[in-house]
Image (cartoon, rainbow, N blue to C red; front, top):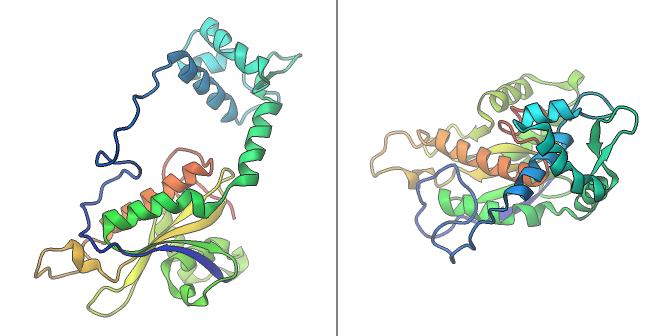
Length: 267
């Protein structure tokens, strides 16, 4: 398998302490005041609950919706009304249960048709590079630079895409690391700690479609002078890469629980 990459170089300024958030920071222009439309937010919760139901084909019952959302049935009915009128939710005529309507299908199809991984990942990769002080890369299956095949991102894609009958011991180790920590690292045997760390990106069907990768070549920049082991910050780097990958997975409509690979993926 060959790979193509979208890379953000290591910024020249000093790296900031890494945290769990990716996105706008307080240093930018003042953000507009948050919309506090309670009814709209509650209606969107109803829509999300209906879309996440995996039970009967005809949909979820009013009682189950009310219980899962901790709302009264009358409140759920009031919120469902406009969603049903706009065909975002469909009510089964025989059972009275609710499922996604044709308008929701059209919205989803429009998103999938127009999705561009490079565009969706751009600001997340820049933020990862800025906060970590090292290059950040999006690795996707496809034609590209084969030199990346030996790096962590390509290794992750190869491991999760290998047919079961061809799985090697290394693929098993990678899969175990992804399930335990959400990321995999490729580190050289030298004293510099050169290498890379990567985490998988999944789409709305929990399929691995890419990997976020960060270089470990400048790992010493996160350590005070005289640090004995440049790999001691590997956990924080790996967690930052995983958080970035999870944020991108969320933009692709992936389930919002746990890390991309830990939540369960398909090949």
